[in-house]
Length: 344
Image (tube, rainbow, N blue to C red):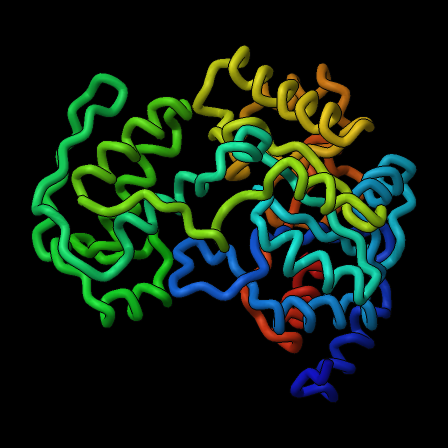
């Protein structure tokens, strides 16, 4: 793999090699895929992911999350230690990410939301994107019963959504969307659905599907891994599977008993499927509260990952390990971002 700007990259690599003792970096990916629109910046193309791995192979010390957690507990994190993680368990983790990880012999941990393994449907935020962020016309009003409260949306100019609108939205984060735009409408609904229990999310999505008069066919390249595919993912011992709850809730939005059930059941589901203990966890959306961390101590996990941007160092909490989200950078930009991660 040839990376443009290799001379500058080597200079960055030499700076990476100089030190950073007792610091480690955990990288957070979601998907290795090319898609038409990616509102949450979850996708890294296979080409760019390969460049990331080449940078790590040449200039860092790639280790597994389990190795990093043990090194952290022992107070002996290797220099330039980097662990790769994937959240959610998209199908491309097996068919796109795993072959590249094997080619570069770099380990990774994939966090699975177990309730999606047999449903053969998209994650709710992707289904909402499919319904609202494809070119076409929608009705001018939407009314939804959200937790016993009737919510109304007037779409206005967002009734119509063109290919040009979609192309513009490819470069805008939902939280930066212009009020009144289709992307803003999508974000508003996403905010309403995020804290709900799964049953209410599904009910709302069914109502939105009927209102939009669109089909509900799952896109094959968006679906989560099936249980047999999760087993295949772990074959070869390079990839570790971790837990990511059952239904991917915003844990802090739910009472402690619901949180505990989501945490415990996802661990039990995976251990029954894989036939061994599962010791790593990641908080969906990075959302958790103080009581969530306390619950982690009751469940037999060794570590849990947050989405707080920081390096792993001596005083890091093993149940609040920080991570850096990775975007669709080329190899040179990835190396620059990695250097910034280590600098803190």
